[in-house]
Image (tube, rainbow, N blue to C red; front, side, top):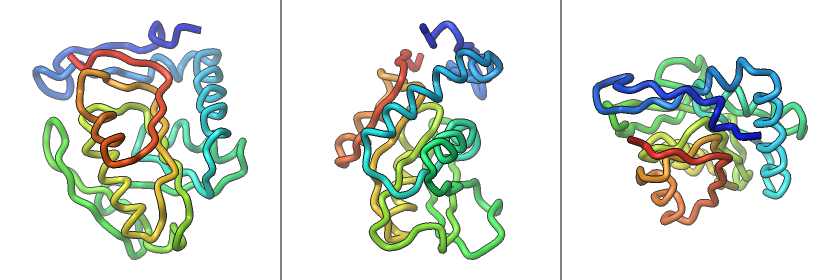
Amino acid sequence: MDLKKHIRSIPDYPKKGILFRDITTLIKNAEAFKFTNDKIIELAEKIEFDKVAAIESRGFVFASTISYVLKKPFILLRKKNKLPADVHSVDFELEYGKATIEVHKDSIEKNEKILVIDDLIATGGTAEAAAKLIEISGGKVAGFIFVINLFDLPGNNLLKSKGYKTESLIEFPGH
């Protein structure tokens, strides 16, 4: 299946100069959504990990399925002030602003291997922040799986330069 046919591209969103790759057209198609999840599961089965984590919010769509099928605990990496218990926080830069992500302090045990799932890798700021959250929580990043890699933006190479394993199902230019 050509998953690229199921991704909508929206120019100048959320700000001028950004070409947004929209997965809502993929997830509303049952066959494409199932195919995507099956492919992520195939990749995940080749990685040794204890828990799956997802970056808010589109990563949740895929990671919950992976957690269920592979019988692994699911950790939420959320935007600032969305988690009710004690948290670790990491501030980071986006291509269109600044943000903070958090994880509950009791989500990750020392040396647990965490697989991170998200819909897209662009500049890498959010993914790098996710890795930092896992590490300050005492865990280790087992790898990242993305549905989309924007190959001409630095995110995937940034993660690889820091020693992280990354996989993606499809590639698009970022602009």
